[in-house]
Length: 212
Image (cartoon, rainbow, N blue to C red):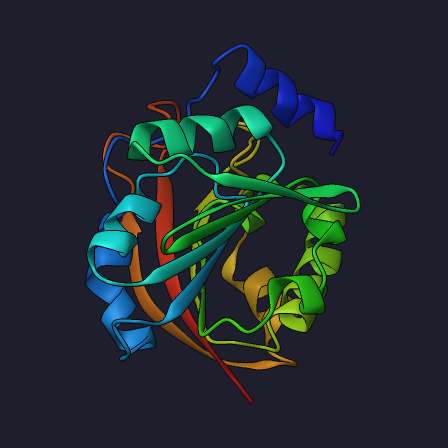
């Protein structure tokens, strides 16, 4: 997918995926994935999600990656925090207490730059990518996080009704993408209330992935 698609969505404030509260599946299932309340949690393609604010209030340290600098600026503005901004090649780093977000292409984030993370919360990254990018993304994420445990959110729906994003990533594809590196556990499989974007019926799943 052309990065300009997402940059234009942020520039034009077309944010149909942004929610005004922490994701209920994060709140409910994170304790099954991580025990340490001071853990460092990585959110790929994090946008300006309020999940970050919730994680910080729970004592977690958060590191994110986001393509849009507009989103990252809004994230820190909404948090009432002035970040320190540094450059790392093609990436910028916005950092403050308990939070560090890299701005740029997630495929430019390296294991050395990211450093160690304890858990990955992927709510909006895998489902934001078209099918031909998802295998590369899953492998890259496993590499840069050293296969840290993941709490992964996915959707299943008829893409003849709605093209996405967020895209439908069925269970068979989740298995194909992750089973080589992770033990997989389906934590929940629920109807999306009112349908996805109010357009079509959909199921939302939460997965726990742990290193083999």
